[in-house]
Length: 115
Length: 113
Image 1 (cartoon, one colour):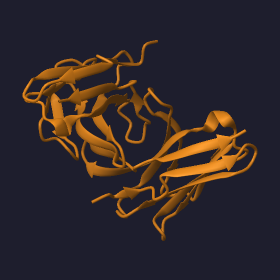
Image 2 (cartoon, chains in turn cyan, brown):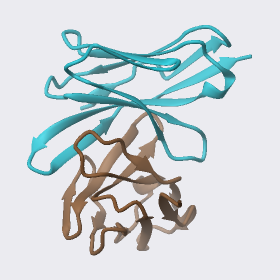
Image 3 (cartoon, rainbow over the protein chains, first blue to last red):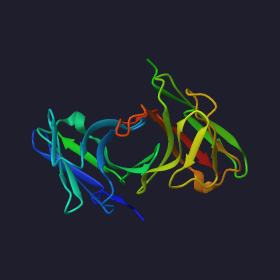
């Protein structure tokens, strides 16, 4: 069963407009969430994160919103730039106790920013 | 600063062959992990290690073995390759803090025929 879901496989936006990428999760025990960006032929790179005790975290053009009651988070990119074109992965973290922790990824959303 | 280095970049195997995917990091990270990326499936955790001598299973461990004899290296072994193991494999590491972000290598693309 997919605990972290990104229901939109792809998204296309115009340069300068807002990009909104969505992510849903099923396990209420997740307590930390991260977004990664991936270009072709490269590994994912960390973008932004949010703790479950917050509902918003902002870093430059990137803002992540968390709605715990809906088990939903979203990544906003404003303004979108052609260099933002990549696959974006949502990921969730849960403390299994002791030294154990596992980062669970969603299926990814391919963002295309049109010039 | 090399970060996480994976070798080889590409590999083709025949069914039943064995091989080891290499992963090395030079950041003195305690935590290391292996993921596979498949179309429509995202990144799935295969095995992980919280330190030298300690390994544990992730979401999809079957068909893979790991060991962690040093802090720097975390090889992934396929004992008898199957076509279902055709995938892109990513190694990642992070500092010991719970919510530290993972640093990924650039991946190994494996094809099993």
